Image (cartoon, rainbow, N blue to C red; front, top):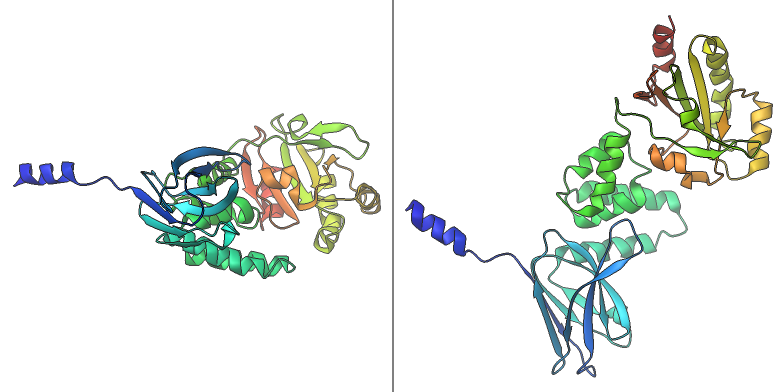
Length: 322
């Protein structure tokens, strides 16, 4: 029986995708399927065939669902997610975006998501909340992996990112999530950030971190009322410990240099400051998964992460500085 079972297992068909399409007025035209590369603006040819008698057919295997674009001649892309199942497409050459795709659950989810988000373009926070709800309702979906990777990575805590990343398998769309989760974990070495200081000269986090001092990275912005309210307290911490092996580095999420500099002067922030003036697209915010401010990251004397957004920061500093 064991031998027979082994033979049956060996002969079981390999999972594959089969894409069947129907269209009119396109005989002889080339149909090209391209794979969109995760975390890039590039795509590569994935499969192709020729339209014959108003139909086309492609077949193959994918290790995990792939985000793809379908072209018929110069018409396209028609976006879909290819998975190992039968997918049928009724192609509308006059407007390829109106083509009907059936058979792919992931493509159905993508269509549902795009339809809902399109109605919220003028309400950013409503859009973010919907994305979070969609992700929680479809934790193992390829669409969720794409949403987290492209849109939510700055709006989720590291623990949430790790939860999602562990549910997506091997898809490259989550490689960035896992890298980010690993990069900002407690005990990991700091990630360097290099940006202009208020005087226009570039400074780097590595100018201060890993040089024998505890370093507190303080993410803030002049436009944030919470940050401005917290600045006097941050200044007290800085002056209390600056001569005891402690340094602070401010990374601002400002977008207007004048407002940034005026806030520095008004709040008398005497520690090193940097900003690329890119608002929420700040490179520092991206590297440290900052999705709200004020936000702090504490580094030990060797430049390793001790804590992030610690509610017990003052107590921790008091112990470290004894």
